[in-house]
Image 1: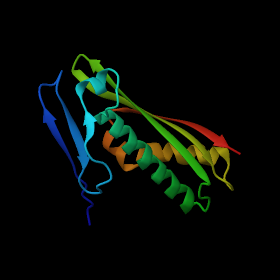
Image 2: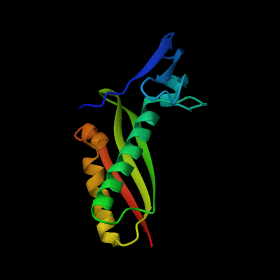
Image 3: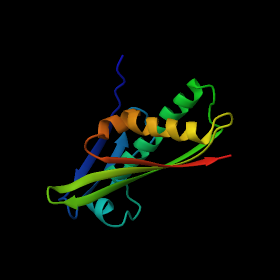
Image 4: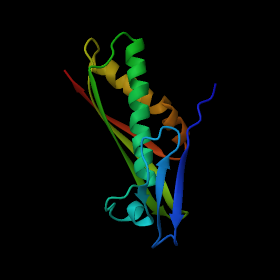
Length: 147
C-alpha cells in the first residue's frame, strides 16, 4: 500500500517581499515554519526553505537506506551522522536545485571501511529521495569511517 504524506503552505504577498508558513499535515510534528524567498537566496534569518527541507529529507532517507543495507549484511551501525548540503543556484534556465552533497560519518563494528564505503555509495544511488533527484541533481557522498 502506498504511503501518502502531506504538508501545507500559506503564502501572503509577492515573491520578493512576501512570506509564508509551512506545516506538516501527516505527522503534525512541525507547524507554521516561516518560509520566504530571502530564506532561499540570502540569509535564512530564522526561516526555512524548500531546499533545507529537501536536505532534511535526503539526509534522513540516506541514513535509513544505509542502515537497512548494513543491517541486512549483519553489521548494523552503532552510529551514523549524515549531513546533506543542498545547493540552489541561478542558472540560465532559472533558479534550480543543482546538487545534494551528503557527508557521512559512521561507526559500524564488524564491517570493513571498503564495505562501508560501498554500502554508502549504494544508499546514495538508491534511497528513494536520491532516485527522485537522480538525473536532475548532482548527487555525492563523502564518507568517513570510524574505527
